[in-house]
Image 1: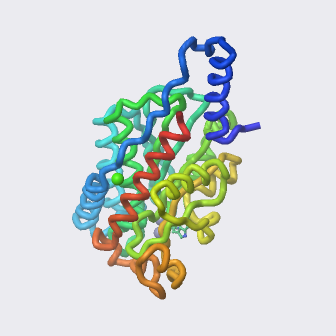
Image 2 (image 1 turned 60 degrees about the horizontal axis):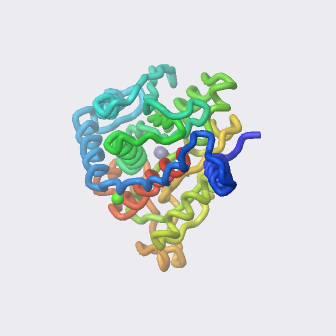
Image 3 (image 1 turned 90 degrees about the vertical axis):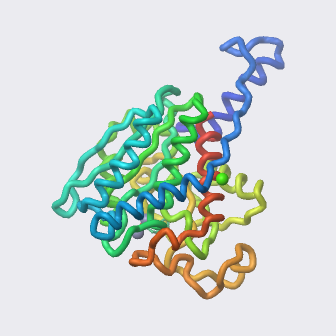
Length: 314
Ligand code: DTR
Ligand code: CA
Ligand code: ZN
Ligand code: ZN
């Protein structure tokens, strides 16, 4: 039976504690490692990635869509940052709507290969615009979290893997291809997949996926700790890249700030913003630019991503 990620981590911690209390020593002979807290993710760094993605779109026909030059240039940008930071990266090719698509997979060296914690975001946008909230926001936040791991020379017990998916807008094609290519053994090695698709909406809500309870609790506890109420995400079952992982029996979770649904008065009362207006009125539109981002939501969600990555892989 697969232990959910935080049960496994907690169990390991408990075993070490019991061993010490019984006067013995843990199997490693040392006290359990202190719980290293995730660093703050500088939202300015995340926004700098968004500015790069917008420039890429402007230089490539105005978009970063599957099969277009803007997607390829986005992939090259993200990969170059990760290669420079010491990641082991690989590009996975697939075909969607007659065009070649690409996933980018980045492994942080080290950690238990049987305890893989993944965080991912789709890097493609629609063809109508630069796709900054959808989904530059998730892509940039996952990238900056990966770079923070490298900056910290973090050595978690688990193995960290980050992914940027192609052709999500065509029906989660890239992430489905990735999961389908995994052997059953490799699927069993993934303790959890964390998905981030639209996490900087200009009229934001704070939604937590209610799939795996342990992952959901990790995010809800984080937001409770910063005094931000959350709601469970109800709009997206099967509507983003976590779907294929969930269908394969892998624990999933994630965060979402809302798309075309309208913010209620009750939600505006707890989150601020404008009742009666869409969470993102530029969803899938040309106005989904760097001006279509709420910095506070982007910052909070970026920090929550780092917290979950550190917590679930410890
Ligand atoms: N399918 C995503 C947008 C989307 C709509 N609802 C949800 C819920 C959870 C995550 C994402 C979404 C897209 O257009 O990329
Ligand atoms: Ca921050
Ligand atoms: Zn979309
Ligand atoms: Zn999306």
